Amino acid sequence: MPIYVDVSAAVHGKAGIGRYAGSLARALVAQQPGRFALFYNRFGEAGPVPGLEAVPARSVRAGYKPWRMAVWLGQVAGIGFNRLMPGVELYHATEHLLPPLRGVPCVLTVHDMIFALFPEHQKRLNYWYLNMAMPLFCRRADAIITVSEFSKQDIVRYYGLDPGKVTVIYEAASPEFTPVAQRLVEEARKRYSLPDSFLIHVGTIEPRKNLTRLIEALQRLRERGLKVPLVVVGGKGWLYHDFFSRLEELEVRDAVYFPGYVPDSDLPALYSAAHTAVIPSLYEGFGLPVLEAMSCGTPVISSSTSSLPEVGGVAARYFDPHDVESMAQTIHDIWTRPDLRAGMRDQSLAQASKFSWKRAARETIAVYERVCPQYT
Image 1 (cartoon, one colour):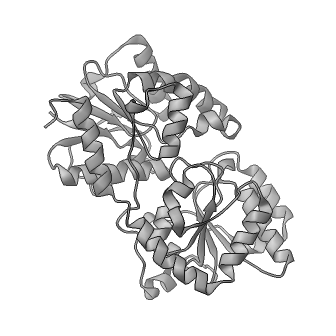
Image 2 (tube, helix red, strand yellow; image 1 turned 120 degrees about the horizontal axis):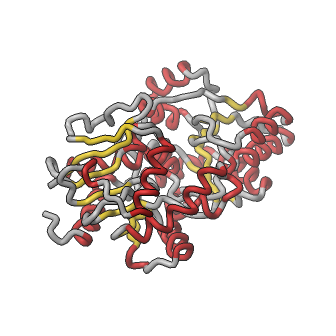
């Protein structure tokens, strides 16, 4: 009987969670071929996940919001959705949505507690839904996986869970994230019309990413005679208007580049082209861009909060994300010190090598074996 893994986030290209679902599913299938099946909500222009085209899949045709409501109501009413996944032996929900399945062990990945800790940064409907549904999903799951020790502490504290129910399994960068040949770097630089030297930020534009303070830090450096270009890779998320309004007020507007959508295949070249990667987030459950940049040998400067020091280790340099001056000084120190950046490159590659999807898949299978004794 198959183990079903939810890849909805990967099918619909949802930034970090989508990469998690796709990368983990590929690693699981590689370790135990023929053991897994995929499940996803089919809406819009949904298509197969690259590298998983040959894996058996089942889907439901429902809009994003109707499916979420159906799952919650099914859990409340005790209605099993087993018919959607014939022969299911175990189900792994890789995003914050756990369908009700009668008599079936379920594993739930909870990536972070952002919705609860930063309600002001959420769409009202999303906050309402997660605040109502997540406690139920966490109770119904037989085991919970999360992606950092920091997130585990938040989850256990917020929901009052037994710490033994929550297992930390680190994510990793995809194998494509490696240092890129200079020829390909230059091709990418020309394709996206990028400057010779720049900071790179990869992530959705939303308040939690703290980009407003980042451009204010760049403004301070500009006033001191140091112009630092910034390339922001990622689409608009929500509540981004304040960021763009502030950008128009500052003198650094001409030094901030928005290349628009960048396919994953081009990201290693952009990381490799960058002078430094910057992650100023107020909160991250894991912070995958840290590892992606480090895997390409790119120095990383990062917020000192949440899980980010856990991921970046001694290879990154850190600043207080609430302190614009701290941010500006850290950028200045790295930008003006080629000797320091050279050492950080070697440290970055070493730190990134500690994380792998092969290891994540092996540890995930151990969770399956624990909640499903007949798992073979």
